[in-house]
Image 1 (tube, rainbow, N blue to C red):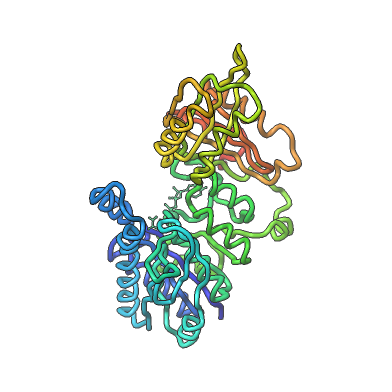
Image 2: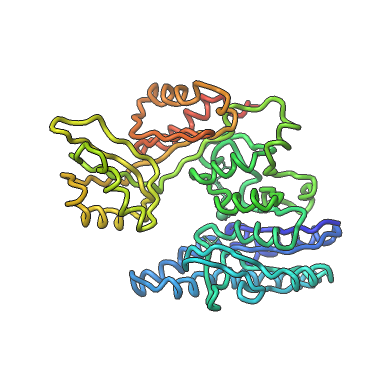
Length: 420
Ligand code: ADP
Ligand code: ASP
Ligand code: MG
């Protein structure tokens, strides 16, 4: 007997037919003797639809009321799954975020989970009740509905798993595991049996949306065992306990089982960045601080930065990237600080994408970046900015070349699946 938290994403929950299939998968785990809690997403497309309603009502909407609106998508699916489970003869009930409660801190629309009161939940699970919990939502310190940021149901699932001390957190989605790159872009992407927390964290943070970045950070911190696997399976598919998907493991665990480790684990892309260039900034101490100070104060995350070779007359161009969603605000702030910064022109560009290669193997290997630059150059893809970390190299390119770049790099690092 084990205690399992199962999470089902939006595509898996899209419509009653799929919800019935999810109910069968859940029931099967309970029939195998496990204690089960389920975390669900809203139906695919529903959260976007609800976000649009808020925008239509007022583009400067109150984030607290936005949370009330967008959290409703998960309320619907949690109730529907409980109904579908009851139809199979299971004892199931839903617990909304405010009922458990899942207490959150910080801002509406991007709240962070502070604590989950799991005592009652554990008692019910031990009695054989299947707990169905809507992902993405919680309750603020003053008792209001909050949401965790897009893709947040993954984080809800990991947090519930940590709170009930689950043996495993299974994240069911529309692909059967974590691949060397998005399998929807590269047909030759290979499924990974294991990936380390550190690598998954880096991959998620540079655009591999299969797991929300925060869910991986939380799993790493709390030692939650996470498996990514498919919900699009037949009733006689191998059980989740046989680990048909991808396990997220610690570095030590992986070393024990994987002698032939690849240099590069995976490649990710992110089209949600925007580039800003400020021309003719004074080339003197303090100039860069004047640019990034106002952005930092507004909690805008600056990612890649390049200061170009100085022009004549002690001036230089500075280029950097911000999340595309923060572009308008960034331009506004920079215009406002034009005098103190002292630039000439501001040039925004949203037609960019960030391509990243990730792998712990690069800690001990030289030449990873040069392979990347050469492979892209050979295909005529121009690199506009570069950033690196210990286990990652990222480049900024023109957005139209995204798919080509990912494919070319996948081949260049020898990641392509060998055809059967
Ligand atoms: P869910 O609705 O279940 O949360 P998401 O759409 O958030 O699902 O995440 C699953 C998607 O992530 C897949 O359909 C796939 O296109 C994408 N994806 C991106 N990178 C990867 C990767 N390296 N491995 C697997 N899937 C990936
Ligand atoms: N429904 C939310 C979203 O679409 C949360 C999630 O699915 O993880 O962002
Ligand atoms: Mg998701």
